[in-house]
Image 1 (cartoon, rainbow, N blue to C red):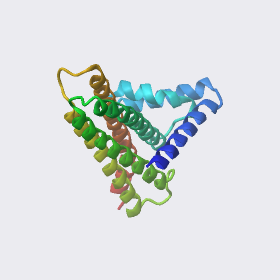
Image 2: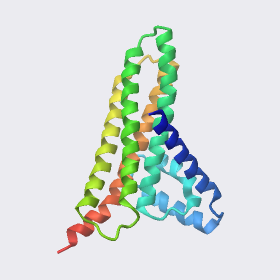
Image 3: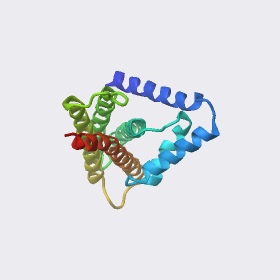
Image 4: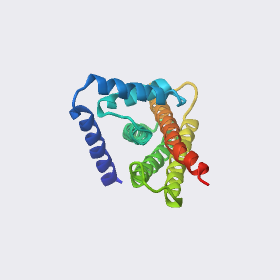
Length: 209
């Protein structure tokens, strides 16, 4: 798993480099931003969606596939960041024999599962390719896999939220709950944007004689 995390972080570094190294062009950024904003309006948390994806506007984002890939990458980044934070917090709680350690441990297991599921969804999305010439059963099988894994990741994060106390939380636990909620919202947005990407092919397939 450590090797996977390292590969993912390297992947994120490449994404950020692409965004920074892209040729600066106001018109290109404006088109990308308009596309991102319009697409994010279809999500449950549009403000958060725009906040995270606007960083990539210079990379000339102009397709549902690109946007879905970036949204999943952002979701994975937030999950990895939260996982790292929770690992440190869990050690502190265990060392101090604080109440709530078991709930934290259970929640961490859910976050770890979500990291693996989102990772698998990104790998599966890459297999779909860019604007496939032939869309058949295999294509929709991959689509279904991505949707299943992202939905499972969202369920795991939501379960983690339910396991955290709702009242009289310490500052540490309140911070953790906020970070987990952030992962849930980013993952929800990613799922919505992927559904938008997949819908165009499902509609086209349904129109075939």
